[in-house]
Amino acid sequence: MAKSGVKANKVVILFALATAAFCLLSLSLKFKITVVVSKYQDPPRAGELALQGIEAAELKPKAEGKAGKAGKAKEKIKSDAQAAQKPGKRKGKEKKKPKAEAAELKKKLTKPEPAAETKVETPGPVEVPATTTPTPDPAKAKRAAEEAKAAAKAKINAEKSKKEAEVKKNKDQVLEKLAKVKAAPKAGKKEEKPKLKTSKGKDINALAAYGSHTARKDFKCGRMPENMWPKFTEQKIKKGGSRRYIAKNGYVSRMNVHKKITRAKTENGRRRGRIERATGRLKDGEKSLVKCLQNLGKCDNQTMGLARSLDGMATLLTTRNAMLKKQFKRCALVGNSGAMKEKKYGRYIDQHDFVARVNALPTRKFEENLGNKTSLRVMSFKISKDVCCFRKNYKPDNPKLQFLIWFPASRSDILKQLRKKYPTNPSSVMPTPFLSTAVGVFKQLRKDLLRLGYGPFEEWEYMTSGMHALLGLVQSCEVVNLYGFTTDVSTKGPYWFTGRKEPPRSGRTQHAWDHERMVLRSLYAAGLINICTP
Image (cartoon, rainbow, N blue to C red; front, side):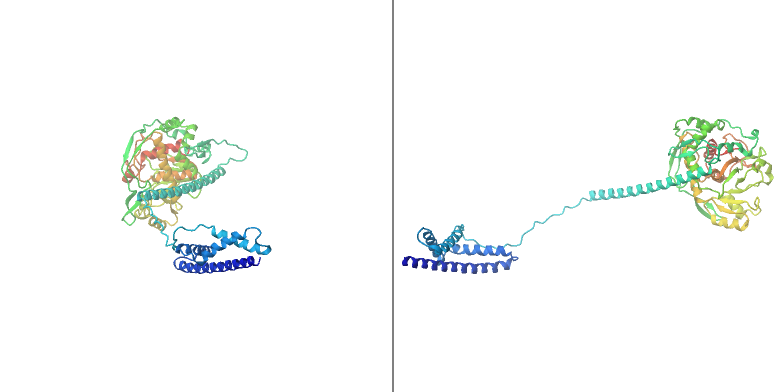
C-alpha cells in the first residue's frame, strides 16, 4: 500500500510539471504571434487573437518535429490516466482530481494535427474591381431633355389656358347678370326670353340684350313715315371662290402733324400670305339666314335669332367695353353717302337723344337732309389732322361737340392741339379695350360670313371711322338708327352728299368696303340696327 501511494504521488507531480511547461510555452508563442500580426493589419478582436495564439501554440511543436519533454509527459500522463481509471486502485478524494484532468487532456489530444507545416500569413490589401461608368448616349440625352422641356411647356400652357378660361367664365357671368338687371321687365310684366347658343356654347338673351325688339320697331328711323324707308331688294352678292393675299408686316407709313413720316400699327396686324375661301358650311336652319342677308326684306324673328347666334355677334352682345361713358336710349349715326341728298331726313335725325356723325363734312348747307343736331364726331387720321392743325376756317357744330379719334399715330399731338384750339369741346381717344373688342368682332364676323358662303372679301388694314362708331353705339344705345350708309351693291350716285363720286385714296387701299357692307346687313338681320337710307 505504501509503494502504491508513493507511485501515485510521483505521477501527480509529473503531471503538474508537464501542465505548467505546456502553459508557459503556449503563452510565449501567443505573445510573439500577436506582435507580428499587429504590424501588418488592423488589430483583430480579442477573441480572434486568443484563438490564433492557441492554435499556433498547438501546431508549432508538431511542425518543427520536436517531441520534447512535453510530448513524453503527455504520453505518460495518458497511460497513467488510463491505468488510474481501473477500479480498486484509488479511494475517495484522490480519484476525483486525476479523473477530471484526464478528461481535459483527452479533449485536447483528440484535436486533429496538421500534416504539414502551416505558415501564418498576414492579409494584404483587398483589391476591389474597378467599376466602369457607361458613357451616356448624346442623342438619347438630347431627346430626353426635349421631352422634359415640351412637358414643362405643355404644363405651363395648360395652367395658363385654365386660368384664362376661369377669368373669361367669371367675366361672362358678371356681364350676364348686368344685362339681366338692365333689361329686367317692369313689375307685373313677364317677358319670355328665348335662349340661343353660339357655336362656342355661349347663352345669349336674344331679345333683351339691348332693349326690346318692340322699342326698336316703335322708334324705327326716328318715327319716319314708311314711304321714306328704303326698299330692300335681292342683291347679287359675291358668293364662293377663293382669293390669295400677300404677307403684310402690320405697319403703314403716314405723315404726322409735323409733316414728317411716321409708322403706325394697323388694326389687322401682321399676317402671312394666305388664301381666303368662302366655304358655305351651313348649320341647321341657316339657309333662311342666307336668304335674309341676300334680301333684307326677308328677315324675320327667326333669322334674327340665327344672326345673333353667330360667334362675332355673340361677342358683341356679351362684351361690355363701351366706347361712351354714358348709355342712351335712342341714337342716330349719320354717314356721308350721296343718298342723304335724296330725301329730307333732318327733322327725324334731330329727334334722337344722341347723334354721332362721321368725320367733319360741312352740314350747315344741308340741314334739311342731315339735321343740325350733333353730339359727337368720330374722325379719321386725315380729318383729325385737318381739324386740329391744317384747316384754319373749321368751326365746331356747337360749343359742346365731342371729338373722338381712333387712329394710333400722333394721338397725343392731335389731342393737345384740339384742346388748345377748341377749349370748350371735349376731345378724347377711343378706349383701347373697346378698340380691341371692335376689331375682334369685325374679324370674327368675317369668318362667320365666309362660313355662310359669302366672300372672299377685299384686304384691309383699318376699319372705317363709321364702322368704329357703329360698333360703339350698338354697345351704348338701346336703339341705333343708321343714316347715310350704303348696304346695297347696286346703289348709284355720288360717293358723298357733297358730290364727290369716288372715295379718297386712303379709303380705297385701307378698307374692305364689301366686307363692311355685309357686316351692316348682318347687324340689321340681328335686329341691332335700323337701316334708314338706301
